[in-house]
Image 1 (cartoon, rainbow, N blue to C red):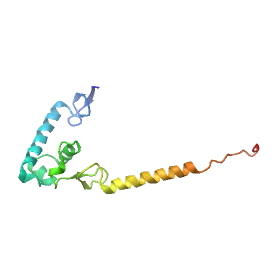
Image 2 (spheres, helix red, strand yellow):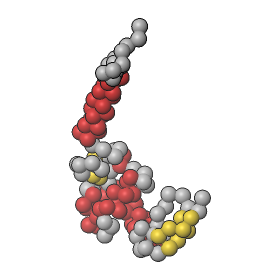
Image 3 (cartoon, helix red, strand yellow):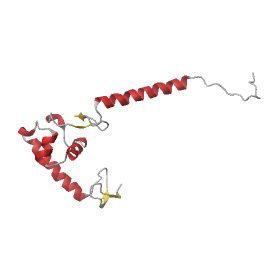
Image 4 (spheres, rainbow, N blue to C red):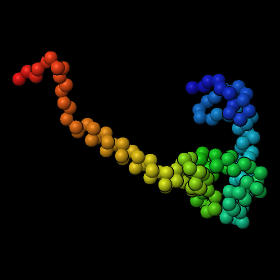
Length: 137
């Protein structure tokens, strides 16, 4: 479904379709930057470059490089020294959205929550009586 929205880059009004949050003009500019990064990394000599080196050589910001990775446009299999930040703690990772530590922390928190919920459901419910009422047998 198409709807009007403001471009998250330039603020101009545009017709939004799908999950793209930028206008056609900004998308085209971003595509040029993606091609610059992609062309740089396609060269065999540059495959061992770090994110900083890619940023320095292409002039593309690290946040945009990270965005390309998260979108799946840059696949890190052939680039052993490129990483991006965990969305929770900013530790450098090469896959997913969270580092192992943050992932485990969330997993343990959910397990603890589920255990507490099970425990609370297992406790017998006791009827409450008012002082002037008696339990009928």
